[in-house]
Length: 255
Image 1 (cartoon, helix red, strand yellow):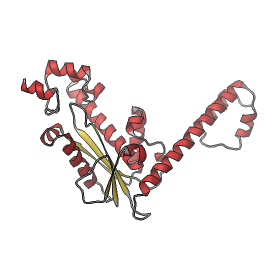
Image 2: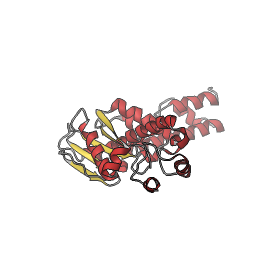
Image 3: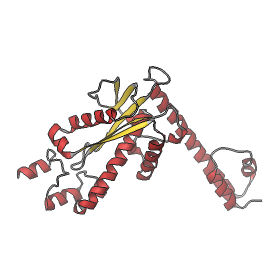
Image 4: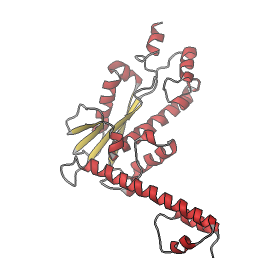
Protein backbone atom coordinates (compact mmCIF):
# COMPACT_ATOMS: atom_id res chain seq x y z
CA UNK A 1 0.00 0.00 0.00
CA UNK A 2 1.28 3.44 -0.93
CA UNK A 3 1.90 5.97 1.79
CA UNK A 4 -0.25 9.07 2.16
CA UNK A 5 2.69 11.20 1.05
CA UNK A 6 3.21 9.13 -2.11
CA UNK A 7 -0.47 9.37 -2.99
CA UNK A 8 -0.55 13.12 -2.31
CA UNK A 9 2.45 13.70 -4.57
CA UNK A 10 0.93 11.55 -7.33
CA UNK A 11 -2.39 13.40 -7.20
CA UNK A 12 -0.69 16.81 -7.27
CA UNK A 13 1.00 15.92 -10.55
CA UNK A 14 -2.12 14.37 -12.16
CA UNK A 15 -4.18 16.34 -14.67
CA UNK A 16 -6.99 13.85 -15.37
CA UNK A 17 -8.88 11.06 -13.62
CA UNK A 18 -7.05 7.82 -14.38
CA UNK A 19 -7.81 4.13 -13.70
CA UNK A 20 -5.27 3.87 -10.86
CA UNK A 21 -7.27 6.39 -8.87
CA UNK A 22 -10.16 3.96 -8.26
CA UNK A 23 -8.18 2.46 -5.40
CA UNK A 24 -7.46 5.94 -4.02
CA UNK A 25 -11.17 6.81 -3.87
CA UNK A 26 -11.82 3.74 -1.76
CA UNK A 27 -8.93 4.45 0.63
CA UNK A 28 -10.47 5.43 3.99
CA UNK A 29 -7.39 7.08 5.46
CA UNK A 30 -8.17 10.72 6.34
CA UNK A 31 -4.99 12.02 4.71
CA UNK A 32 -5.78 10.22 1.46
CA UNK A 33 -9.35 11.53 1.39
CA UNK A 34 -8.09 15.06 2.01
CA UNK A 35 -5.64 14.71 -0.90
CA UNK A 36 -8.40 13.31 -3.09
CA UNK A 37 -10.71 16.21 -2.21
CA UNK A 38 -8.01 18.72 -3.15
CA UNK A 39 -7.47 16.88 -6.45
CA UNK A 40 -11.19 16.98 -7.29
CA UNK A 41 -11.39 20.71 -6.49
CA UNK A 42 -8.38 21.38 -8.72
CA UNK A 43 -9.94 19.39 -11.56
CA UNK A 44 -13.24 21.26 -11.17
CA UNK A 45 -11.45 24.60 -11.28
CA UNK A 46 -9.51 23.47 -14.34
CA UNK A 47 -12.75 22.46 -16.05
CA UNK A 48 -14.26 25.88 -15.33
CA UNK A 49 -11.18 27.51 -16.84
CA UNK A 50 -11.47 25.35 -19.96
CA UNK A 51 -15.12 26.32 -20.38
CA UNK A 52 -14.25 30.03 -19.95
CA UNK A 53 -11.37 29.63 -22.39
CA UNK A 54 -13.64 28.12 -25.05
CA UNK A 55 -16.17 30.92 -24.55
CA UNK A 56 -13.46 33.56 -25.06
CA UNK A 57 -12.17 31.73 -28.16
CA UNK A 58 -15.69 31.50 -29.59
CA UNK A 59 -16.25 35.20 -28.86
CA UNK A 60 -13.16 36.11 -30.89
CA UNK A 61 -14.00 33.69 -33.70
CA UNK A 62 -17.51 35.16 -34.00
CA UNK A 63 -15.97 38.26 -35.59
CA UNK A 64 -13.99 36.33 -38.23
CA UNK A 65 -15.09 36.26 -41.88
CA UNK A 66 -13.95 32.63 -42.28
CA UNK A 67 -12.38 29.83 -40.21
CA UNK A 68 -8.81 30.42 -41.39
CA UNK A 69 -8.82 34.13 -40.55
CA UNK A 70 -7.21 35.67 -37.48
CA UNK A 71 -8.37 38.29 -34.99
CA UNK A 72 -5.96 40.64 -33.23
CA UNK A 73 -6.64 41.75 -29.68
CA UNK A 74 -5.43 45.18 -28.53
CA UNK A 75 -5.20 46.66 -25.04
CA UNK A 76 -3.16 49.10 -22.97
CA UNK A 77 -1.54 49.55 -19.58
CA UNK A 78 -0.62 52.76 -17.82
CA UNK A 79 -3.11 55.46 -18.83
CA UNK A 80 -3.51 56.68 -15.25
CA UNK A 81 0.01 56.99 -13.78
CA UNK A 82 1.88 60.27 -13.30
CA UNK A 83 5.09 58.84 -14.76
CA UNK A 84 6.29 56.40 -17.37
CA UNK A 85 4.91 55.42 -20.75
CA UNK A 86 1.52 54.12 -21.71
CA UNK A 87 2.20 50.67 -23.14
CA UNK A 88 -0.02 48.96 -25.70
CA UNK A 89 0.04 45.48 -27.17
CA UNK A 90 -1.55 43.78 -30.15
CA UNK A 91 -1.59 39.99 -30.30
CA UNK A 92 -2.83 37.37 -32.73
CA UNK A 93 -3.49 33.97 -31.13
CA UNK A 94 -4.11 30.54 -32.66
CA UNK A 95 -7.83 29.72 -32.71
CA UNK A 96 -7.47 27.25 -29.84
CA UNK A 97 -4.41 26.56 -27.72
CA UNK A 98 -4.68 24.55 -24.50
CA UNK A 99 -1.48 26.15 -23.15
CA UNK A 100 -3.36 29.47 -22.94
CA UNK A 101 -6.19 28.16 -20.74
CA UNK A 102 -6.60 30.48 -17.76
CA UNK A 103 -5.76 33.73 -19.53
CA UNK A 104 -7.91 36.54 -18.18
CA UNK A 105 -7.92 40.30 -17.74
CA UNK A 106 -4.45 41.15 -16.39
CA UNK A 107 -6.00 43.01 -13.43
CA UNK A 108 -7.54 39.72 -12.25
CA UNK A 109 -4.19 37.90 -12.14
CA UNK A 110 -1.31 37.98 -9.67
CA UNK A 111 2.06 39.31 -10.82
CA UNK A 112 3.44 35.76 -10.90
CA UNK A 113 0.56 34.49 -13.03
CA UNK A 114 0.78 37.47 -15.40
CA UNK A 115 4.46 36.82 -15.99
CA UNK A 116 3.83 33.11 -16.49
CA UNK A 117 1.04 33.76 -18.99
CA UNK A 118 3.05 36.45 -20.77
CA UNK A 119 5.77 33.88 -21.46
CA UNK A 120 3.18 31.39 -22.75
CA UNK A 121 1.54 34.01 -24.97
CA UNK A 122 4.86 34.97 -26.53
CA UNK A 123 5.66 31.29 -27.11
CA UNK A 124 2.34 30.31 -28.70
CA UNK A 125 1.06 33.50 -30.36
CA UNK A 126 0.91 33.69 -34.13
CA UNK A 127 2.50 37.12 -33.64
CA UNK A 128 2.46 40.07 -31.25
CA UNK A 129 3.79 43.61 -31.02
CA UNK A 130 4.29 45.88 -28.01
CA UNK A 131 4.56 49.67 -28.29
CA UNK A 132 5.78 52.18 -25.70
CA UNK A 133 4.35 55.70 -25.89
CA UNK A 134 6.66 58.01 -23.87
CA UNK A 135 5.61 60.74 -21.44
CA UNK A 136 6.68 63.44 -23.92
CA UNK A 137 4.20 62.18 -26.50
CA UNK A 138 1.47 61.89 -23.91
CA UNK A 139 2.02 65.56 -22.95
CA UNK A 140 2.05 66.58 -26.62
CA UNK A 141 -1.11 64.73 -27.69
CA UNK A 142 -3.10 64.07 -24.44
CA UNK A 143 -3.37 60.62 -22.92
CA UNK A 144 -6.40 59.48 -24.95
CA UNK A 145 -4.91 60.36 -28.34
CA UNK A 146 -1.47 59.09 -27.35
CA UNK A 147 -3.01 55.75 -26.37
CA UNK A 148 -4.95 55.49 -29.63
CA UNK A 149 -1.84 56.18 -31.71
CA UNK A 150 0.17 53.68 -29.67
CA UNK A 151 -2.49 51.02 -30.19
CA UNK A 152 -2.49 51.71 -33.93
CA UNK A 153 1.32 51.35 -33.93
CA UNK A 154 0.96 47.99 -32.15
CA UNK A 155 -1.39 46.75 -34.85
CA UNK A 156 0.88 48.06 -37.61
CA UNK A 157 3.79 46.17 -36.06
CA UNK A 158 2.14 42.75 -36.34
CA UNK A 159 3.96 40.33 -38.64
CA UNK A 160 0.65 38.78 -39.74
CA UNK A 161 -2.18 41.07 -40.79
CA UNK A 162 -5.41 40.11 -38.98
CA UNK A 163 -8.81 40.03 -40.65
CA UNK A 164 -10.30 41.99 -37.76
CA UNK A 165 -9.04 43.97 -34.78
CA UNK A 166 -10.74 43.73 -31.38
CA UNK A 167 -10.00 46.70 -29.13
CA UNK A 168 -10.78 47.23 -25.48
CA UNK A 169 -13.21 50.18 -25.46
CA UNK A 170 -11.40 52.26 -28.07
CA UNK A 171 -11.73 53.10 -31.78
CA UNK A 172 -8.40 53.26 -33.62
CA UNK A 173 -7.18 55.25 -36.64
CA UNK A 174 -6.58 52.11 -38.75
CA UNK A 175 -7.94 50.82 -42.05
CA UNK A 176 -8.58 47.26 -40.88
CA UNK A 177 -12.08 46.23 -39.75
CA UNK A 178 -12.33 46.76 -35.99
CA UNK A 179 -14.70 46.42 -33.06
CA UNK A 180 -14.57 48.45 -29.87
CA UNK A 181 -15.58 46.11 -27.04
CA UNK A 182 -16.50 47.41 -23.60
CA UNK A 183 -14.78 45.29 -20.93
CA UNK A 184 -13.16 43.42 -23.80
CA UNK A 185 -10.40 42.02 -21.58
CA UNK A 186 -13.03 39.90 -19.78
CA UNK A 187 -14.79 38.72 -22.97
CA UNK A 188 -12.05 38.26 -25.56
CA UNK A 189 -9.07 35.93 -25.23
CA UNK A 190 -7.01 38.04 -27.63
CA UNK A 191 -7.72 41.28 -25.76
CA UNK A 192 -6.98 39.59 -22.41
CA UNK A 193 -3.67 38.35 -23.83
CA UNK A 194 -2.85 41.85 -25.06
CA UNK A 195 -3.64 43.26 -21.61
CA UNK A 196 -1.18 40.81 -20.05
CA UNK A 197 1.59 41.64 -22.52
CA UNK A 198 1.08 45.38 -22.05
CA UNK A 199 0.95 45.17 -18.25
CA UNK A 200 4.02 42.93 -17.85
CA UNK A 201 6.04 45.02 -20.33
CA UNK A 202 5.17 48.23 -18.49
CA UNK A 203 5.92 46.75 -15.07
CA UNK A 204 9.33 45.63 -16.31
CA UNK A 205 9.99 49.10 -17.74
CA UNK A 206 9.08 50.78 -14.44
CA UNK A 207 11.29 48.37 -12.49
CA UNK A 208 14.19 49.37 -14.72
CA UNK A 209 13.30 53.03 -14.20
CA UNK A 210 13.41 52.41 -10.45
CA UNK A 211 17.09 51.48 -10.77
CA UNK A 212 17.80 54.89 -12.33
CA UNK A 213 15.60 56.86 -9.92
CA UNK A 214 15.30 54.82 -6.71
CA UNK A 215 14.16 57.85 -4.69
CA UNK A 216 10.73 57.82 -6.41
CA UNK A 217 9.81 54.20 -5.61
CA UNK A 218 8.72 53.32 -9.15
CA UNK A 219 9.17 49.63 -8.34
CA UNK A 220 6.43 49.87 -5.73
CA UNK A 221 3.80 52.08 -7.42
CA UNK A 222 4.70 51.88 -11.16
CA UNK A 223 4.27 55.66 -11.49
CA UNK A 224 0.78 55.96 -9.97
CA UNK A 225 0.02 58.85 -7.65
CA UNK A 226 0.53 57.13 -4.32
CA UNK A 227 1.43 59.01 -1.15
CA UNK A 228 5.02 57.78 -1.47
CA UNK A 229 5.26 59.04 -5.05
CA UNK A 230 3.70 62.43 -4.29
CA UNK A 231 6.06 62.98 -1.36
CA UNK A 232 9.03 62.14 -3.61
CA UNK A 233 7.79 64.62 -6.21
CA UNK A 234 7.56 67.34 -3.56
CA UNK A 235 11.11 66.60 -2.42
CA UNK A 236 12.90 65.91 -5.71
CA UNK A 237 10.66 67.40 -8.40
CA UNK A 238 9.65 65.64 -11.63
CA UNK A 239 11.99 63.71 -13.95
CA UNK A 240 11.86 63.63 -17.74
CA UNK A 241 9.71 60.51 -17.37
CA UNK A 242 6.95 62.36 -15.52
CA UNK A 243 3.88 63.56 -17.41
CA UNK A 244 3.98 67.34 -17.27
CA UNK A 245 0.36 67.66 -18.39
CA UNK A 246 -0.89 65.61 -15.42
CA UNK A 247 -1.80 67.11 -12.06
CA UNK A 248 -0.28 67.78 -9.60
CA UNK A 249 2.88 67.91 -11.74
CA UNK A 250 1.41 70.57 -14.05
CA UNK A 251 0.78 72.90 -11.10
CA UNK A 252 4.14 72.11 -9.54
CA UNK A 253 5.93 73.20 -12.71
CA UNK A 254 3.90 76.40 -12.97
CA UNK A 255 4.59 77.13 -9.31
